[in-house]
Image (tube, rainbow, N blue to C red; front, top):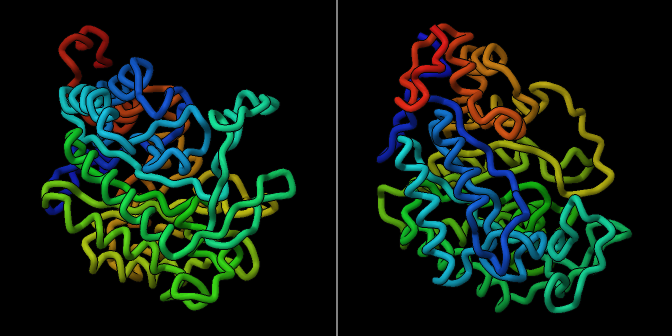
Length: 355
């Protein structure tokens, strides 16, 4: 039997195969609200057979948005539309996940396809925050260094975001601690120059993430699986390392995190990242085999044979697919055909099934 189509049993959930839709921002909300674009976008990938969908970075506060078009979960009014997306995903036998996020010093930026858009103060532009007052690059706004009181507010924002996610019906909550956003900024010594309990040594730099995990675990029911996405390395001398990722994985596994979604980079603009197929797989492999946590791998995984080999080699437990699912919502069905696995199709689509 193909490894790609073997179920994976979590503590209180079952992933029907090893293909997960990776979170990818759509930049198409308004005041944090999802709309019919998101309903169709996520619903179609659930129809396409993935085992779980992790919804795009969803801000726990208005200040934590990457752009003014990001989705949000900072107020109760956001729940209704999100719950409809969850129901659409569930209707197609797929687990629904949401990525809770705060963009930190990478917040308040233009929508990617409108790079020259003039941002309007108070609507599309706002003051940003970070562990230390260091801008992302020479073109970026300088962030304000967070006080301890402000850090406590952000921890509570994540907790309340998780409470709303539970009310909306999500099966998975993923904490975004990667790609140079706020939690990653605390993890890395390149962006965290603090001298207090949130900076300096390893236990201090991971403190924000640990406190967020502990806060969320206090309020989510057992049926909700907690995941974390990290950047396993900054690809920079003196930055966050794979060895630190392994140590972190061991700690958060003991706190009840079930899956580590392993990516890399995003902290600095100048990092040289070798973008090629499987370039991030070794990180998931090393973390998995040194910590025992379930890992997912991402990055330029575009075909069934490639994904199958990663699992056969025990380099990761899950395959997170991003851009390939934008190109092809029915990647799973094509992969099953290539690997000669007879999948159940939606009855409405049976007439198109390859025999």
